[in-house]
Amino acid sequence: MKESIGDRSIAVAIVVILIAIGLLTFFPLYYVFVVSFTDPTEYLQKQGFILFPLKWSLASYRYLLSTSTFLNATSVSAFLAIVGTPLSLIITSGLAYSLSRTRFWGRRVLLILILITMLFNPGFIPPYLLVRDLGLINNIWSLIIPVLTSGWYVILMRSFFDSIPAELEEAAMIDGCNDIGIFFRIMLPLSLPALAAFGLFYAVAYWNTFFSAVLYINNPQQWPLQLLLQNMLIDSSTSGDAGMTSDVQIPSQTLKMAAVVIATVPILCVYPFLQKHFAKGVMLGSVKG
Image (cartoon, rainbow, N blue to C red; front, side, top):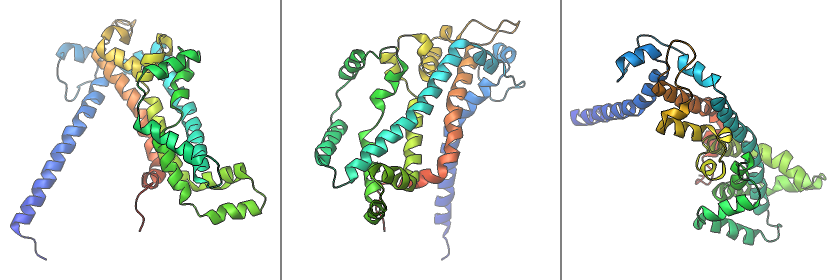
């Protein structure tokens, strides 16, 4: 069919609008990246909007990576993501597998309790009192244990296990495999797409830990990266000393932008490795033809 002039005009207008929206979305990221690599001397001279620096510099990154406060915050966030993500995947998949087995006594009651946690939010005080009574205040495990799993992820993972044919489990039981062996040897390998998707969600959540750190962590040496970054953005005095020990002063603005880039890059690097399975995992619960 031949396109009319009106149809072509509408198509061109849509493309132009989408390109404009894309540029508006990309520009803040570009500006943060450019300012973080701007030479301190040039930034101090201009003290304003910089679209493209005349001189690039790694001074801000060198300064941040030389301060113990920033390195401690980065190591705390890395620990949360590296340790918390596998633990959350094990707890979520194990609970979802037990709920998907019809022979599990009390699974309906447990499922209702999980649904209640999704419908009713207890607020901030009960979790804080629980963490305090467990003696986890100013303990890094207070940022992992209370959020080990999510009711929504358990429900989605349960639907994934329900889609796996029961004949595989029966054949494994005939061969002498117990429930633990079935879970680790059959169910988990078959659920790699779901594990990759939920693993990415958990890793992003742990890496971006902020509010729970505000509640449970009072020691600045145990702050995660996002909490330190928030303090840097609202108060330049928390970004470190006034400058490096050299003759060049590091502007607080370039330090903030460099910290934002460092906090963003790890997650951007993880996603391409999980993209293959992520596309399948996000389709959990969708209608199958």
